[in-house]
Length: 166
Image (cartoon, rainbow, N blue to C red):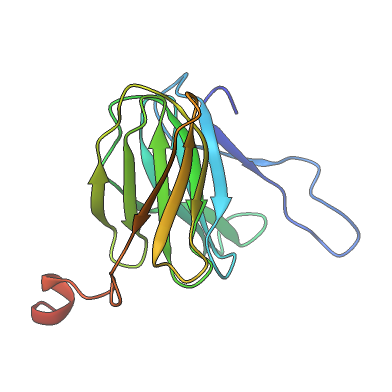
């Protein structure tokens, strides 16, 4: 919502719950600007006007009416400006975010890491797409510039932490 909340309804056999669960995803008034599920449709990516980027997933909670609640999984490197574009990988748990100044980040949800930053040129991005094989990206700037990048990141799940820490 424009108030910075996610609203969720549960399907209860005969229909949806009458009252949605409302979950704040940022500070009051920090509007949700982009929203999409990652591959597998279990994790939700949320970007806001303040530039925050986070992932959310449902967890079991027997104390609530539906037995599930939405919880934050990871908070990623924030943008300095409003997040306006989001593109998710069709191959893994990676995703791209861009702000209204053209700065782009490559994130990996499983590790909670921001892997790459591409500085902006002050122009908003009209369209942003992650390549189907997660080996590149393309975007169209509001000034009509089309840019492409090759990405060689065959194992984004490997980090120092995943290799050497419990």
